[in-house]
Length: 200
Image (tube, rainbow, N blue to C red):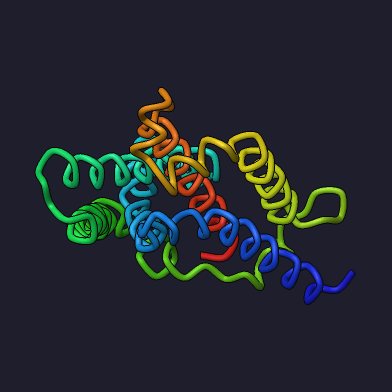
């Protein structure tokens, strides 16, 4: 099949996966969180490179996912403990983490092809360079991620639904609102990191 087909399929998988989770973020008035996580993964990528000394995907994904979760935790702490408005806590968290990432890359990885432009502006046209069984690895990865998110939303529908629309009622029923919040944020973080690797 042509490169154009794989590029369109990759973009479609990214859009569908992100859109499924994005609906819940919009309903929870947290639509900026996806943008925050996409910027907050930069220090995770830098730290993963500095610790592993390698640009391979696995350490980068682990570091990026860890810092994505750190960002969501920081947003929650600023909102709940410090009583900062949610939009302000999102802005504080991602700009702080992004700045740390830029500093780490500038000072510790300046001799390596790992810079802000390389990390932030991926190129979907390059997905055909790495294939497995004739299919780009990005398509396998994003296809698996899409199925995992579908399964998460299918099996977690009731919990996500009730904690999104009426968290107080969910708490009175004994449903852990915080658990569902972190599960959703974890799914958003993992989705952001996996799509980051494919399309930037």
